[in-house]
Length: 275
Length: 344
Image (cartoon, rainbow over all chains, first blue to last red; front, side, top):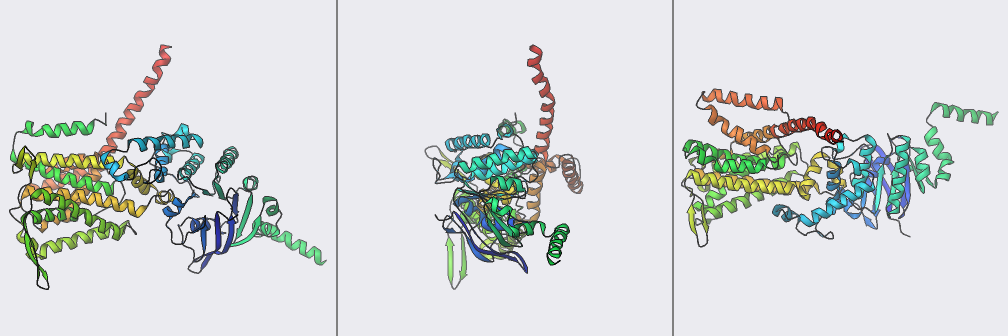
């Protein structure tokens, strides 16, 4: 089976700084894959390359067989690859409902089923009736599905942190993606909010959407992922199912090796071996 | 209630000449104010709804004025290599349409040029563009008469098949023409803002990265907004030329752009009624002040009024009053909610 997303020897350099040295992995349709690594490992940079916000210095990302080189972010979204952002990212001055209406931009586009071919002319003539009603129904359904139905008429910027995250997910889902990239979706959420979110991720996968996740919450990552890709210093150091990653020495080294306690422990082990 | 406000205002403005009589001084002030207000509405489409500041907005206005005037006056110019372009006069109404098209095209050019980088670059490109166009109008004397001005511009003639034609020479006729075009522009902006296109503009203004990530094409959206905005400014310029019947390169004065910015910001940018309210206040303020003080003092009061408005209502008059009304009705709500409990 050919992968839905393939990251093909991608490198990103900012001047002399190497953010990603050489990243190479595939994601298959229907998978939930997590991309993990210590802070500064290049995870968000990788997301930005995949979604066209950054141009890679080398290599290429392919999505459903299409090379993404030179494509703008909005063009990549139209191919069916959507993302959320690390910090809360909503349209703060609009209601939650209008946020989703903005997110449904693609669905109101000319050529989409049940819509007009001349949206601008429709707007000028005030003729958007039928397709506009369909959009509103769609927005309401999406809000109910993500559990935000009760917040529809509130300003998105005034919602609690976790709820703004959900708005971000609803916005990404509004583009009807085949694959969703989630950038640290549960950071700052409490345990029960995280549990609800894990359920949501599974429901999204049940809708046939492939998921690539960047996350620091290790228990959550271990619970939800089919496969984990580990980055350190812009380089892939391990890849495999959660059980394998948990006991991978390179991963343990990457996460614990920088701490002085761990280094002391490692040194003690070496000394004991010499003695 | 706020939904009825535009209709109430339109009715009041339509009835205004009946109340004022045909005082030519007042009607003139109202017409010029109306034309500037159309300019302010067009500026608001960019500044208020996309967040892009066009500080050369007067260029589109002036292009509209010159294109309309030259179309209806005709011209005969040499364009080099011995070629001449000769244009016989066309009806002023055709000039109006060409003014809208020409201004829209220049909006497209400016948008294409500067929206890849945006922000401060857009401000600079628009200022330079306005200055370049002004210099052309000033120095291409064979076409524009330069500082000698284009004179004897014909008034707009409207005709309905079977009903005859009217040449709009009187101030009263021009007042209703400006009111009609203004209403049309208002409707265009209102329906755009409530549409998918309007949501794309809002999305880009509030959170550009997020807007891109939901598939909104930033360059295209902003360029279309610039085209529509410029076309509306061009319509206002055309009205100006055919009303005054004389234009010179002073139509490109930077201070007129500043007046439009003041109207938009004081009235409330990003609101439908903001530029109309701001336009009426700052357009008619000099009329109200003229009988009681010297021109120098008028400008001081003009500035003070602006400062006071923005001090009391930083987001402008319309959002400020809306917030005030919302607070008052919020105070009323608990009473309403309590009443079923009381009945039980």
